[in-house]
Amino acid sequence: MFSTTPPDGDVRPRFEYYPLDSTKLQTVEIDEFPFVIGRSASASFQINSTSVSREHAEIVRTPTGFCVRDLGSTNGTSVNGRPVRETPIVDGDSVSIADVEMTFVCTSMNRLQRTLTKPLPRKKPAAELPGASPELSATRSLSEALLLQAIPLEWSHLADTASGEVLMSTARVMPPLDDQLSQADAKTPTRVAARLELLAWHLAAEQVDDRPQAEGLLLRVTQQESLDQRLLNAVDEVAGVLAAPRPIGVIVNWEWATATPDTLRLLSHLQQQGHQVVYDEFAGGGGGIEAMELAVPDYLVLSSQMVQDVANQPRRMQRLEIVHAACSAQHIEIALPASISAADQQACRDLGIHVAQQRTRLGAGSELLAAAH
Image (cartoon, rainbow, N blue to C red; front, side, top):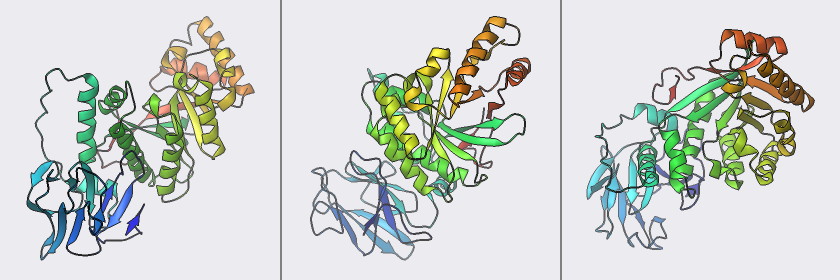
């Protein structure tokens, strides 16, 4: 009954959900009717939670589809956030059994396709709770985005400016959700933030399958607190959902990456697993390159201030020459940030820097999930 991913082309009804304190998506097939969900050992799907009644709800097949029916539970059943007694459910609906959230699936479409085809309800902005902390407000917004699977992705590329070849495509959660990810994790990592970022990475993997196979995929790490063992597991999981093998890795803020030796060792382990590592927003000098010795990145993206007006300021060019020499000694490819002047880009090319960030749209036709500034 249980599996981590459904077979290709499988159209049997099922639930997808994340177990408590886990970022590993699980699947439970609905293989009998009525399909009873509850805490009882005799339930078709047993949920070991004190908030779930012994026989909490059931799924039944009707002439027109499927229906969920609450069985007089103590803590109720909801569909798409609305408490129900009995209601039809369709592909992509979020079904909550007490505090356990699951997605109902009854087609062979993947999560990205369901997100693009399912109409999203128009919602009035949620009123802020009096005295609510920024962390609480951010977590609330993330929960709503996760419930609707409406996660906007911003794409950029690392491209060879001489040939125009795209080397790596980078996916990140767009504002304002990216700021809310950081706010929600300001003190301690929250389950909803980790789940949302992982789902965003899954969506990115599904989108990038349309790109040339030699083009790599970079997953933007937006939470410093997620730089632990969970990162290794998450990248391996995303690599496993790619339709065809391609280079995959993470792009991490330079200061986060070099904050502690443990973080560098973690990123080194990621490289040992065959994944790429990229640091961005680099604003250091030659000593900063030496500090990366435990986990030398494949690419180093410079900060805008490093190259701003470098064509006209000899001291900035001298500093850039030192960084370039240090990177060459470590076999690190330098990349220029997006949106620098043509004169500064030419000065960097003359120095031998031929890789640059480019912001563009990937997966055109999906304004919800693939947007560019």
